[in-house]
Image 1: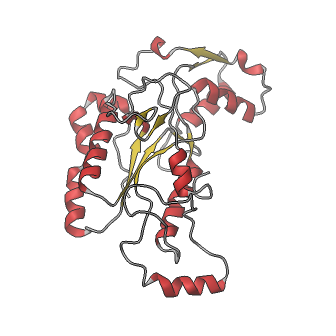
Image 2 (image 1 turned 60 degrees about the horizontal axis):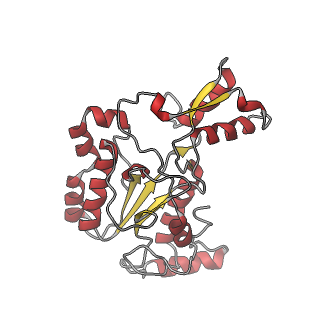
Image 3 (image 1 turned 180 degrees about the vertical axis):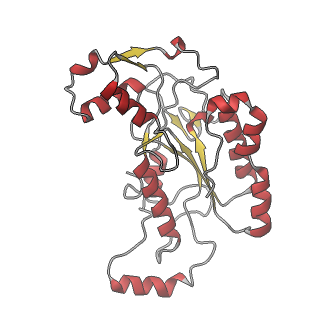
Length: 278
């Protein structure tokens, strides 16, 4: 399961060679081929592999803009480096699961001194005296951390379950929208699982392929700010003076960034099952 990344678009823009080395580690595939040729490789990619040129409410499918099959070219170094490793995996490692993650929000990481966007937003809505300026023209399918953890735990559970996933071993569809949660309740089920697990073939069908992994809605930062304001107890009409919509072009980011990268994650919800990915 490969989650390591140089994930700051600004840092990638400042050092593109390092970004490519870190985010497209071809030596990892060489090592896996040598030591674990049957391994399933789970790779966390990004929604920034898309160019962001669509106009809302259009969403990106796994095939790109509105299902087109033409290759999307990312607009920044970060997206290009992640897309390069996607292509390498797709070419060299059939047993793969690529999850194109949107911006993940949730509790702060225990390994970071500062929180991420959600904590920054919550703190400023509480402490800021003046209005808070947020982008109203940048769309992303913000994703809750617990949903990601539920999906990964369900995947791990399915691999050791007595009931293997149904569907092709490569290509991405589990079939019939069957939930991948394979654990059964009760001692009898546990005993049956123990007996059958040893005979589960290494080639048992798994959830494989390339999937978008985003929340159910494409939101701007203004949308998310209003949701946080209401969750904090603010009335629906009170945030007009607290949150001021601005265009992203009004801020110099010092790096390129896609504008509208809302994703359709229906394929993942269908194949993984809503118990695994609500």
